[in-house]
Length: 131
Length: 176
Length: 180
Image (cartoon, rainbow over all chains, first blue to last red; front, top):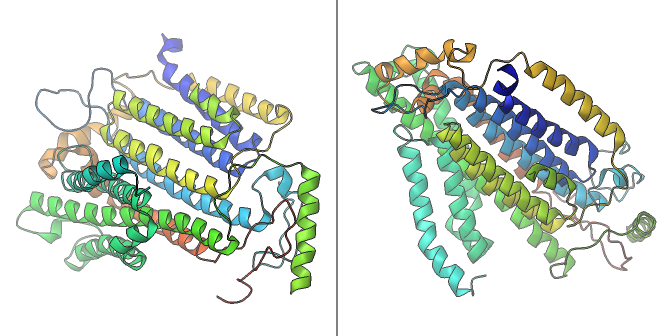
């Protein structure tokens, strides 16, 4: 019935909430980026599971197969995966720079340091108690 | 790691297979799961394996960084060029039909192969470039510090951290 | 389970390994859900590239996460409320695997029926990706190109040593004070 028919969506929501919790509750930036990736992967599972047909198979035309799963979500998710790795790479590069500037990548410690002029960046006005 | 015999032998066996498999995925992308992105990532993974075993300098001798940047741009430009070729020959942007007016299916297939090749080139070189940037950073830090690889540091308390930062601040300021 | 492990472990190296396992498990799930291309991409990207980039960053920063004192209650409250809303919204979605879903009847029959007659290639996903929806793929190539450029720009500034916990006399020689 309807309750059991949605079990894939329940799994997706659980994973998404775990990823969301990691992003907002953990201070370490690398952990946050991992949480963001968890969130993204759960969104991919949502789309792919929505596109599946019971008894279907991979959408490549071949003999002996009658029902194909929907190829359109696969296309969207392929793009999304590559965009996800691009975001992860830029986020990790930023955290490397932050680590060099401040010595750590923890949120709560970053908000307690005052801006120093041994600073790093080329922007003069930077306030770092933004979290 | 290059002195470890097992790693070297296995790598010598695996890396050509990985690169060949990447090319297979790239050009067979019309008949089996695959295509540009997968091929690019697998190719970059093969190169990264080479770098992990033989070192970054050896890897950069094989594919220099300048070449990576150039190929990265060329992939995107190839895609745009195919698109504009469609416009120049009378169709819409990225329309493959005017490329070979006599064979509509052949035109689509040719367009798809070229476009996927552009995508594969760009993705492979971007991933290799990102890895080079990250890996090179660590050796640059070592050159400045002069210290060997540090073992994992347990986290110091906050007071010690802040006071240590301020002391190095004053040290830097007096030096300038 | 693996996701909860990634959340709670403070040793970031172990968290990275668990993250790679999570990516591999989701790639296996994609295979079960009949998505061959996506599984290949997710396995290569998630278990390969993301893991190695996080490991590269971990060699430069600390390995252990700062101990957070308690469970973050406001975050947990926000997450629970959002989760409840999402679970309630999910009940409106169509059933899993039903062939009469709106998602299956809108564009998919057109693609499945016409790919071979239009293009002559069996892989429907590649055909849709490169020909029917070619501009999206173009935008995506541009995105990954810009990401490569961004990382190249961010990390080509020569590094400055991070402030160390113990005071050193001759520690920092900043060299990007106007020399690039």
